[in-house]
Image 1 (cartoon, rainbow, N blue to C red):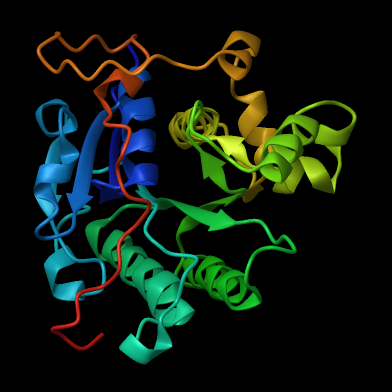
Image 2: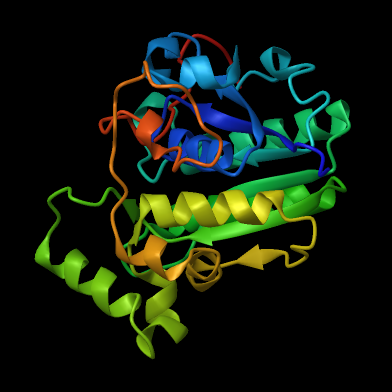
Length: 265
């Protein structure tokens, strides 16, 4: 019988972190979430379906021992929006958090780290991409087995979006355009992205260093690509590992963390 994989996900209580956690649960993984202090109530039903710890990824001391006994760590925390006036540079938001999590992996004996990075596109800040690339390089330098997901922007199916982004999503997911640069940058449904990340993270034979949108789509079945997943917020129903997992989510979870302002980083 295959060993159940233990996966630690940063960004519990956020749009990206919670969707990836739900996808991992659907694959039968044992999931632990790192949740920012004060954001525990954002977990919703996931709080009963996962193990979770309160920790601040900008405070290395709070991460001590959190990766112990995990097979893989998935780092989802970051932001495309900087606020230098408040000390929230792209470097702080995206590189520093990844550096601290990578160091947590090293000290905790975890050899594999999955980083949710970003694909470069005309509408994405160069400073944001630069901070993500620096995070990618750091993970490799400290001796971890890096899995880099250069993901496009994600969206929730059924949510209202602009005409341009709807058109781009449709064209970018359709061959032959999906085989080109357009396929890399086109916005992607969050369930497709999360499912792809989860399956790559749990695959011991996934040896590539960098994955793009096409790789994520290939990890989804045709029926998963083409139909939206229902969101059932009734947390009284028993958890079934082979269910979609996305029924555990609230639709209005935030995208990512920003660091607290009460300590130095």
